[in-house]
Length: 220
Ligand code: C5P
Image (cartoon, rainbow, N blue to C red; front, side):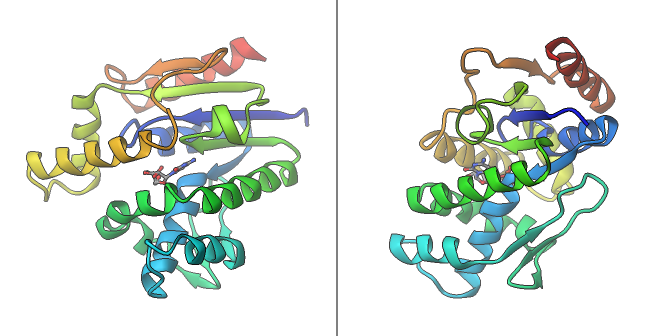
C-alpha cells in the first residue's frame, strides 16, 4: 500500500500506547512502541549489572543488544537476547530507572537508528509512538501528533493501570518525576511546527482513537 507513517508523542498516562495500537489496527499499519526499547535496555543493564553511571558501558549495551519486539498491533512481546521480558519491563523498578538510560545520548542515537531501520523495513507503513518520534525519529512522517491529557486524567489512568495499589501521592511522584526527567532530554509536551495536538482529558478510549483517526484522515 501507500506509505503512511503516523508519529505519536506524549507523556506517560496519556493513553498513547493503547490508542496507537488501536489506530494501527484500524489502518492496517505496523506498530512500534519505542518506549519498550528503552525499557528493554534498562532491564538488560539491571539484569547484567551494568552501572547506569558508566555511560560507555550503557552505550555499548545498546549497540550489542538483540531487541526483538512485536511490530504488529495484534501481538505484544519484547525479547532481549532471546529472553522474553514482556512482563518484567512494565514493572515499577524499570519505570523508575528508565530515565537513566533515556538520558544516555549514545544509547539514544543507537535506539533512534534502529527505530528508523524498523520503520523503513515496514515499507514506511507504521504507527510509531514515543517521546521524540515527531521531532527526531520520524520528522518526515505523513502524520505527526502529540497526545496530551491533563495531569489529573493521566494520574487516574496510571492508577487504574497499576491496579490502584499505590497511594495518590506515590502515584503523582512516579508519573510526574518520570515526565520531569524525560523532558530534560526531549520536549514531548510541546507540539513542534506542523504537529497536531489531541487532548484526551475529556475523551474515553474510543473517542480518543476516533480523534486520532480524524487527524490522520485530514492530513492524508
Ligand atoms: O512510553 P514508555 O512510558 O513505555 O517509555 C518509557 C521511557 O522510555 C520514557 O519514560 C522515556 O524515558 C523513554 N523514552 C524515550 N524516548 C522515546 C520513548 C521512550 O526517551 N521515544
